[in-house]
Length: 319
Ligand code: NAP
Image (tube, rainbow, N blue to C red; front, side, top):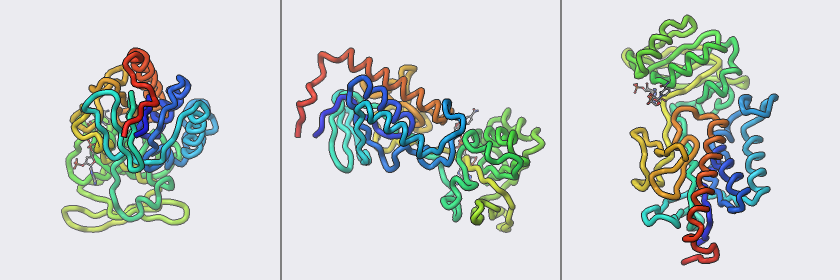
C-alpha cells in the first residue's frame, strides 16, 4: 500500500486545481484521474468563458495545461479508477483503485457529476457538433439558430430562457404536459416570445450530417405519431448523476446525492474535503470548480498542518 499525504479523486478542473495547490505546498499529491483526464471539460469543444483566455481554448488544451502546471510542482497522476474507499477509521483513509491501494492522510474528492443522456441514436455522434449539455458554455455558438431544449425541470427552463439571448427560437420538448420546474421559471418561459413548447414528446433520434445536427425525430407519447423537427442544436437538461457510488454510506450526501460540504469544503468526515460538481449542483462552471478546488486544497493544507504531530511518516507503508 502506498502512503500519501493527499490523494485527490478525480481530475476535472477542481481536482487539477487542488493538485496544483497541494503540490505547491510540497505535499506531492496523487491524482486518481479516472476514466478521462479532465472529466467533462476534456470533451468540451471550446471554452470561451474561462478568464485569461480571450481567444478561447479547447477543453483538452485547458486540461493539458492544468495537468502540466500541477505536474511541474510535483503532482503525480495515476490513470486509474477508484473502486472503493474506507473512511470508517478516520485518517489515514484507504483508497482502493483497480491498480493499487493508497493510504492518504487527507482526501480531496472531485469526482464530478455526469449530465444524464437521452441514450438515443445520434446523441453521442453529435456531442460538440450540435448536441450540448451546457447552455452557458455553448449558447454563444448558436446565435440566430433554431434550437431545441429537452427537459421540463428548472435547468431546462433556466437554460432555455438563457439560450434565447442567442438563438432565434427555442423549442422546449417535454415528455409530459406538466412542467417540473418552479412556477416563477414557468411564468418567465411562457412570457418569452422566443420559446415554444412541444408537450408529451420524446426525442427518438438526433439526425445530422457532416455539418452537425439538422433535426430531431420526435414521438408523441400519447398518439405514438412520429414527426421530424428541423433544428441546428439540441440542448439536453434532464438532470445530472453525481458520481457518488464508490462512497456508499461513508460520506453525507444531500437528497439529490451530492456530497454535503461546509464553507471550507469540509465533508462530514474529518480530513476528507470535496470540491467541484460532486458537491455543487448549481453552477457547474470551469471557473467555479477551479475556485472550489482552490478552497478545498487550502483547507486540506491547513488541516494537515494542524494535525502534523499525529501524522505517520510517509515511509510507513503497510501491506
Ligand atoms: P430535474 O429537476 O430532475 O428535471 C429533469 C427533467 O428532465 C424533468 O422534467 C424530467 O421529466 C426530464 N427527464 C428526465 N429524464 C428524461 C428522459 N430520459 N427523457 C426526457 N425527459 C427526461 O433536473 P434539473 O432540472 O437539472 O434540476 C436538478 C435540481 O437542481 C433540482 O432540484 C432543481 O430544482 C435544481 N435547480 C434549480 C435551479 C434554480 O432554482 N434556479 C436551476 C437549475 C436546477 P419529468 O418531469 O417527467 O420527470
